[in-house]
Length: 184
Image 1: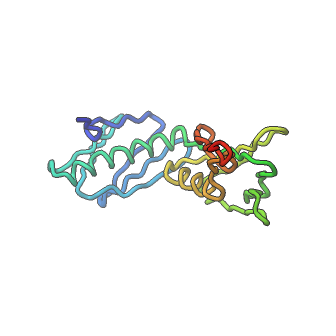
Image 2 (image 1 turned 180 degrees about the horizontal axis):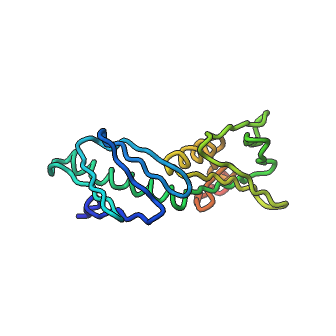
Image 3 (image 1 turned 90 degrees about the vertical axis):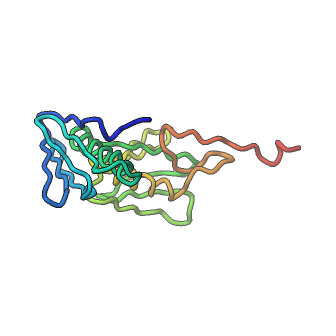
C-alpha cells in the first residue's frame, strides 16, 4: 500500500515555506506566492530543505487527509518554482481564437463569438499558425486554477464524437464513432 503522505516534500533554496497557528501554509518562490489551508488535525514539520506532514491517528479520515495535504503542498512548491501549463487545441472549420486585450475571443460555430475573461492569476495566450489549428495556452502557478480555467474553455464546445470538432486538450485522444452509413 502506498504511503504518499509519509514522503518528505523537498524544496530548494529559492523557496520559503511557512505555517501559521491555523495551519495556513504559505509558500513563496520565484514565480509567486501561494497559500493553502491544511486540515488543523495534520501537523507540519519544516526542516531546512523539506517539509513532513504527520497525521495524529490511523483512522481512515486521517489517512486520507495525510496524502491529500502532502499532495497539495507538493503542487504548491512545483507551482511557485516551475508553474503549470495546459494547452487546448481548437479543431473545426471556422473555429478560431484570438486575444483582444485581456479577453479571449473564441468563434466556435455559434451565432456569436464567445468572450472569456480569465482570472488575474492565470495567463491565457493563443498560438495560431496559418493553416494549423489554433492552440490556447493556459499558464499559472496554481494547479487547481489552471485546470479549472482550461476545463471551462473546453466546456464551451467539447469535442464531438463523430468528426472530432471542438475544443480538446492537446494530448487528449477522442475516439471517433462510425456514422449511420457504417451500420449498413
